[in-house]
Image 1 (cartoon, rainbow, N blue to C red):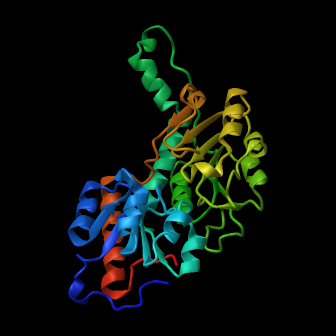
Image 2 (image 1 turned 90 degrees about the vertical axis):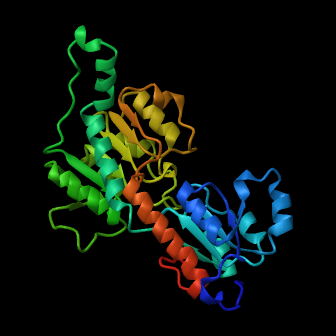
Image 3 (image 1 turned 120 degrees about the vertical axis):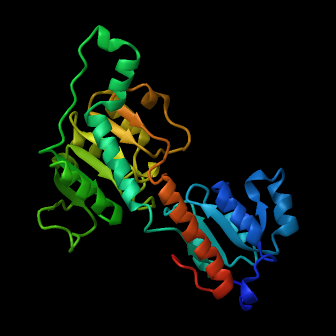
Length: 327
């Protein structure tokens, strides 16, 4: 169980040991090091020795939505009280292990929705209007010898959204601004969604109705490879898959096959199954736009996330009141 002793008086946190699982933004990492006794797990030549020497004193895991915290790591830290994560996704954190120990987990929600929605629509536009392909066409001199290939319009077509949460709703509003119809699938209809948004009771129905299927659901056991060959076939040869959720939501091998066989019209991807590894087949396809998991990566969003991250870390150790606890 977490250490029951009172919080440090007067915000004195310099004697508290924290384990930094992976790199943070340089300015944020500096803040953590200035306020806490930080141990760099990812840089340790011998991680087991680091834990043997310091594990008994470590009271916080400092991590990101990419690196998370495994059950083995959580169980190796007997005085662990809190896991503070930079990012929204919780799938890399073993939440069951944290709950079993009564360990508080925090993340940084509510600050990146607009930027992720912008990224989703950027991918919709890039694939439909062939932006990246045409950029290469101009740079290579192809315009001098050939007519540019045609793209597809957005107005009047359906943007299907899997997961009409806070991000999904912002994507929907942006799609409407382009004159698109909006449809969505959740486990149940969203009561506050505009009446003209079409609710689809299942994912195959949504895919079949959509020109663009935008994924905006969390990564979890329930969403693992939720989009496979059957869903891609329902989306069809004129359909486009947009993924700003998690790579685990898509069966990546099935996606490659559908694109290669012409059973799917295109894809815009910000996330992948084994980041930062991306299948070579996807890299070779002109009808695929690839981003390096930058959905929320803007200066403004990162600053807001860093501030919230420190409010969680300091809030726990100074007042036992993190700003955005998950557990």
